[in-house]
Each structure stands twice: as structure tokens, then as C-alpha cells.
Image (cartoon, rainbow, N blue to C red; front, side, top):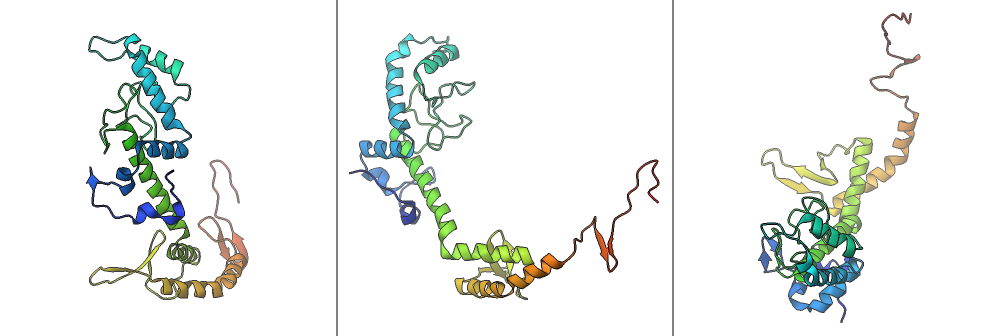
Length: 254
């Protein structure tokens, strides 16, 4: 059976795990799915690049004895680069110094640090949780899926939506109706001045503020629109604009 994941269900975000490796949550599906199911899902999420990469790694093992090595037994950059240019037509493996041979897939950064390499795809990299290449990619893919779930939650959750809406109103109109409401991004909260304890506004409190802004926003917009431009460079009095004096060397503007 094919593994299915839907961002709207937010399954991974809500999952509680008792297994952690390198301080990273290990998802239940990592230990329940077969290797074939993992590859199928990874291919679906990554344009069939995982099956391609596995075949390319097998091809390298077939050809590796034909590649030149240096005095320390490492493959020479020129020889490895030439092999990659000939065989890696999807350009998944890095050919630039000093990361030549590094694989750019599913959560490995673009600078080569801590990546797997074509020379031995099952050699565990610095930040990996799993030794097996497919197992590690599946773990990284689930991490990316959980990240998407959190982004979805932030965008579509009722509380988040309303908090963002009220925050925008407060920034736009610079008012909080006499309430000591503090802002940090889209977070709205109260803070006790003695204990410094903080409390986020409740959903009901956000609804009250939203209703208040809905009542005044049209009037506020009209008032803002009717006001003349006033800032550091534009001084206004009852007779109209007074432009700041401009002085240029050798020019008398009077």
C-alpha cells in the first residue's frame, strides 16, 4: 500500500514520539514502512530523484575501479568530475570544489556540509540519524513534511488568522483601545509589570478587538486619507506646505 500524507491532517506535527536520535524526533512511520514504500513516497515528493540516485550509486560501484586515485587512496577530482558529467545527467551530485561527489537531496544544505557522497551513499554524515541512505532521506522528508504542516497551521488556524489580522490593524492604526496589549510579530499578549509573566490574548479577546476595528476602520481610513502629507521633509501649517530650506553651495535660493 502506498504511503499517503496530507498537510491538512497535520499528522506528523501532532505525533508524540518516545524515540529521539541526535535530539531529533523519530517518526513512527520510519519504523513501520518497508524500504520500497519509503522509496515510492520519496520519489513522489522529489520528482523520482531517489530511484535515480540509487541507480547512479550502483553505477558508480560498477565503475569505481576505472577511476584514478591519489596517493592517499581518494578519487582524483578530475576523474570523479569526468565520471559525473558523463553519468549524472540530472546534476544531483556536486561537481564543484571542495564538495565534489556530495549529494544534494532532501534537506542536505547547498554548501556540501554534512552531506552524503556518491563514493559511499551509506556512509553516515555528520548530522544524520540513520546509516542507511533511504532511511535517512525518508526521515529528512518527514521533517520537511512536518515543517509544511506547521506553516499550514500558521496560515489557516483560526487563532493564527485572527491574531495576524488584529496585529495588522494595530500596526496600521497604532491604537489598542486603551488596553495594554503588547506585540511581537503577530503575537499579541499582556504582560504583568511586577512578575513579568506574559499571557497571550484568548480567541474571544481577539474577536472583541477585531469587531472594534471593523467598526472604525472605514472612518480611520477616511481620516488618514484626508490628512496632508507631514513628515521630516514636509512641514505643514494652516497656510499650506512649507518646504524645508535647500542650500547648495554658490546658489542663493532667496
